[in-house]
Length: 455
Image (tube, rainbow, N blue to C red; front, side, top):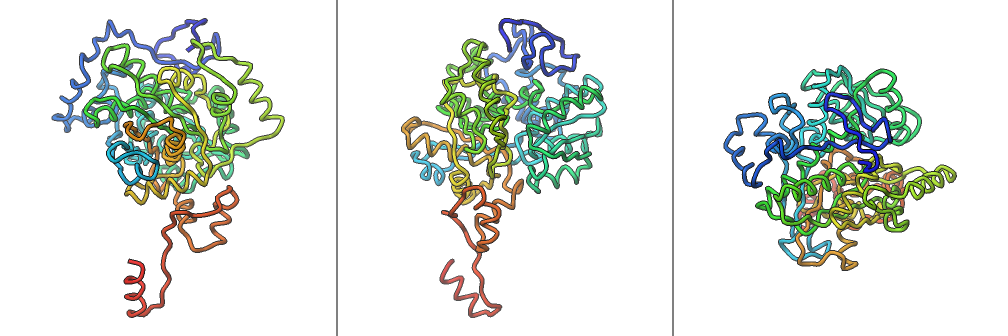
């Protein structure tokens, strides 16, 4: 990642950062030696081989574009069977014309989020290195995915670090049910991330957070499946929530490599959407002018921003817990993606996120709050005229709605005390699109009257 360093390492080594310069590592391929596909349509041959687990996988059927391990060594539990759904109802809400908005629903993965794409690839590398334990810091989705892969494959033991009170119950329940060792520390995700790095170095535990470059290789395939669903045509925009910035970084890498191989004529534009309570990228990129700058982003801008956060003791705070991160580990890689895709960054409030979430749900694809940041961000970009009503847009829905049922129920509830406790404290003052339950007496006539009145 650092052009002034140039150090290279073998895939047999367990490293997330360069020991020479400290930059995060990136997986690079010598395409001249690998013989990549001549056309993206070559991947269609896998559709007739669904009985082969690697052809069935939405990650490993694209093995030719992430060939860091032999195909027979790739770990799969059936990840990547996801859906690209046209949504005219949500298009109307955000200001696009019918037929122009598509929702990439990653909630259909085995653990209910996009993380399984990257976990499949990280597990493959961990297996190659002989790892016995794997660890992560998590706001919930990574821990659920890691715990699931450990439980299904029995290849290693999961150790997860979560901040106190910083994980949705839907996600925590998964990690506990799948048998992971859960370590809850006083602090937030950034504190947990710091500790997992220290512990992994001390105990030799394999780290599967998105600092791991192989995680991002798996997450590239989300974009391959989007192109596949669109008949291999490139959309105008990809809109993605921004937390630790692994997805946006992976998407940028996917399009750089496809351009390098001549498999697409252009890259789509990329919009990364922060929650207003965790808006480091937005402040640095849109307000501070931080740019990729040929691989030499200004470190002083980043350092000064983080120092100011520390002085003011600022903590990330948003109902979108999956992106409640103040120090995104893939910040520099995301800058590269924004450069590749002529990207923009926006922030949206929790109010905007939950209203967008309700509209997505009303359209039939329930998602967790962080997912809806992409739709809320698109609505803002369309209002600004940055995204035109005729442009073809894909919003990434990163996780299933049952990942955080508390937020959903609180939005639709008639219980004002619950609303205030869960959402009001986050600056959400109204449930614009609430679908409230109707209370009636246990009487047939009353029930019929309510159905005729409200149904």
